Image 1: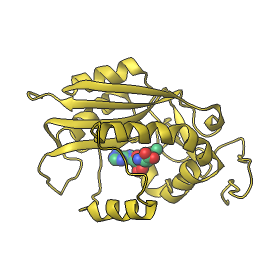
Image 2: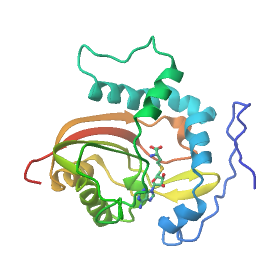
Image 3: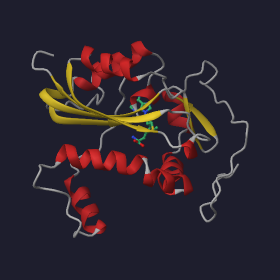
Image 4: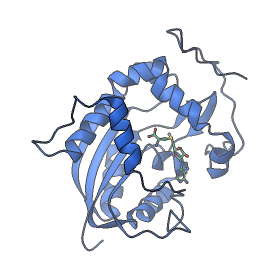
Length: 225
Ligand SMILES: C[S@@+](CC[C@H](N)C(=O)[O-])C[C@H]1O[C@@H](n2cnc3c(N)ncnc32)[C@H](O)[C@@H]1O
């Protein structure tokens, strides 16, 4: 079946019944489902380029980008608006040293690669998609935390109270939790929280994802963690 999205039009057309895929019978889409069914290009087009993407460009995207600029820039050094996006893209691509496979359920998520602990770790809309319950979420958080230096910074972008999102007419599960759970899981994993921002979800995205809000959290790993 072809994609329901018509990029040239304004409306997003969706069928009402979304196929339930193997692994989703339990309500959870596991790693096997991701390997076989998750189409990253359609995900990108749906959430970042389509008419929905245009809505998110006015809500989710400025929320995330503004918070990233605040986190990474000093007061005097702000993003250069004189630089063209193509130059920015080149700079970013040139800075990437390696792209590695990651499975947050493994004690070393980058196994078999062993990395020196890093200064900063960023995860976006991933842990809630990967974990079937709160215990698995806390374990995955501990696993990724092992990649970070003491005093290193965690940037976590997450959806609150989301149970699913749709990509190419397929429903992917998301672990539903609130702010209180997230804060306590972060502290339990050995962090002190430095910043927590919330952006309420736009009604326009409710046909594809049932989250209430997106959060942008910054925390540092305590020395004894
Ligand atoms: C909602 S998408 C988020 C994509 C992107 N990071 C973003 O911010 O838009 C969920 C992502 O979680 C990844 N994922 C699912 N299970 C995972 C696992 N066990 N370990 C690491 N990533 C996983 C999927 O590959 C998918 O890219």
